Every structure is written in structure tokens, then in C-alpha cells.
Length: 133
Image (cartoon, rainbow, N blue to C red; front, side, top):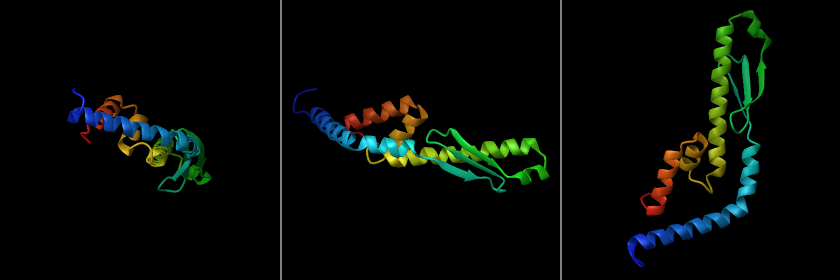
């Protein structure tokens, strides 16, 4: 790559973008991190008998089961309802965390990071570095 070539100019532009992003992150990241850590999402099952609250990582914080559930003792149905309700809450919490960080990190990149999808995250980084967005 030669100095002054389009590739070098693209790399310089990306380096400038990273520097500006880093400076913004210094200013905004702690606040965004605190906001993300405070995320709690509650979902209620379709029958209204189960409510699940999860934190930002989808971890179960609270589970409420209406006593009316004992009128229809079906443990498999209850287990499935709990699992589905917690899953929906976790998905919404993940979406909320992605939204919080969107001013600094593109949504797709944050989602890949949260999913542990290293291949996608690295591909997106390479695309940004080469200007192939």
C-alpha cells in the first residue's frame, strides 16, 4: 500500500474515525454502560399467569407465578410458559442494550458482540477498515 493511494486514504480515514469514536467513547461510555447495566425487562405470558423480569444479560431477576396456576396443574405447560416468557424478556433486554450503545457502536456490531459471534464482528471490522460498508 503506497502513501497517497486510495487504500492508504481509506485506512487514514478509518483511523481518524476510530480516534473520534474513541474520544466520544471516553465521554459517553461510562454513562451508556451504567444505563445498560440498569436494564430490566418484564414480560408476561399470554395467559397472564407468569411474569418474568430479566437483567441486561437475560439473567432472571424475578419470577412471579399467579396462584391461579394451581387450578390447572400441568407442570409441563407451566415450565414451557416460564421458558418462553423468560426468552422473550431476554430478547427484549438484548435489544434494549443494543439500542443504548447504538450512538457509539453500530447495532449489527453490538449484536454480534453480545452473541459472541467473533466471525461476524471481525468481518464487520474488516469492512469498516477497507471502506466496504
